[in-house]
Image (tube, rainbow, N blue to C red; front, side):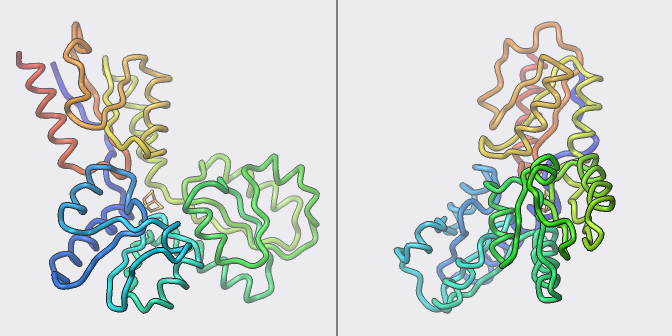
Amino acid sequence: MEVIRAGKMGFCFGVREAVELSEALYIKEKNKRIFMLGMLVHNEHVIEDLRKKGIEILEEETVLKNEDDLAEGDIVIIRAHGTIKKIYDRLSEKKVEIHDAACSFVTGIRNTLVEMENKGYDTIFIGDKEHPEVKGIISFGKRVSIFGNLNELKDSGIDRNGRYAVLTQTTLNKNNFEKIREYIYNNFPNAEIFNKICGATFVRQKAAEKLAGEVDLVLVIGGKKSSNTRKLYDISKGINPKTYLVHEPEDIGADWFAGIKKVGITAGASTPEEIIIKIENKLRGIIDV
Ligand code: F3S
């Protein structure tokens, strides 16, 4: 039996940077209290590992309600998805050291939004308004109209002659983006559209799609709260019914492998390499028996 990895899987650039920043702070700032705002990345193993090092989770709600016990000089790491402006403001008021691990794709969109507003543009934002990344980005704007998808924009009755900067969520599907671009181009003469899509999730999805068609069974490794892991699972399951979502080695069922010759593995953008290796080892144990 063969174990085959997807061509692209595991940590994306933004998640890697956030984890590396936290680990560097832990090594350098032994005498300070260090907190991560919410889940730094959507993987329970990563969070547990950081907690063991003494980096505690600080919930956004706690900061917003002013129920935290933050003191001057404490360190707060902003998670990879970023957060809302009010939290940045609160943290600054408390004179804590803010280390912003928001991914540069996220901060890039945020900065463009602010820049364009300052130039007099309103913002049309297309993305999931419940997603923390989107909540964070749009909180920096004053004149933002948000739409879940192109149809919502089409139905909105928004003034087509306005001056708009059109921005989207980092993970928007590229095909959808092209449709939006075309629609904006044809219907909004004074709009500027920005392509700020991060390719990390897309390339992982494409690799999972390819893998699912080439193996007998697929294991998708990732956190329970990771939406990009769930998406990899859905894509793979649609192609290969023997697709399983696993969080840790213990989730693997020995009876899944009867008659299986090729096992494919893929992992979400916040799944650490250590867990992938542990699962591969467990898999080889099962296979060798
Ligand atoms: Fe950043 Fe893209 Fe990862 S936006 S956090 S590199 S999925």
